[in-house]
Image (cartoon, rainbow, N blue to C red; front, side):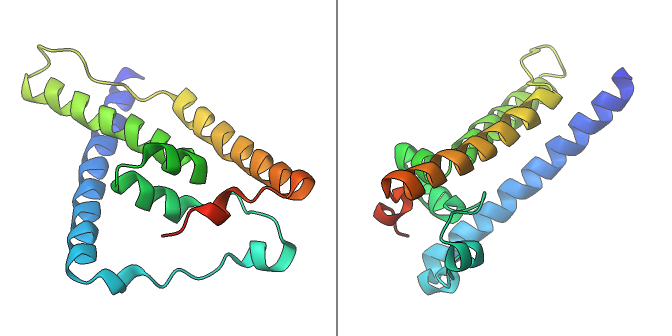
Length: 146
């Protein structure tokens, strides 16, 4: 069991760094060609039913996070700062532990609870935003544009 967990963590480690490289390339492309990724179409669920889907606000949250606006990122979609902070600490701590040849045992280890927390964040975000929108006509995402 422990060996399988090590394999999973190693795979997550390499996938995570690959993802960071891809994000860096996208960031460079956005700086060079700003109009490249601005074709942000409307959400089909929001257009058809007038409610937010579980992913609504994700793109704005990523943009806000990269611009250093952590509160705006959290308001747009709290899963984004959660994922970046948890994933970032996982990659940094695992890298330090691996570079030190496991002498510094600070590596964050994968636990299923992190996925359950992420699911709870998405569901709670979906409920709160739609209750605010439908009951009190408070549109949280109207104030945040890309």
